[in-house]
Length: 81
Image 1: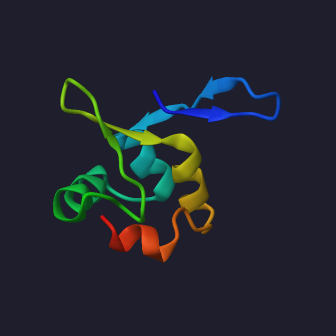
Image 2: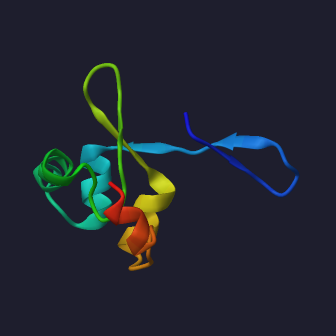
């Protein structure tokens, strides 16, 4: 699981969403996210984790940023993918 350091320096887990939950937060159909990952490896600069059961897990913090219209990655980060 991806971790983030908080101010005290301890690591805390970042929650992940299913494709259905991420699509609902973004106002999309789940297949839109799956197709984008198939074609480009990411959706809006967010690369999901592939779980052992072949399902995708999306970082909730980045999905929320994208839903709010905030940038999730620098344009140079996307060109490297």
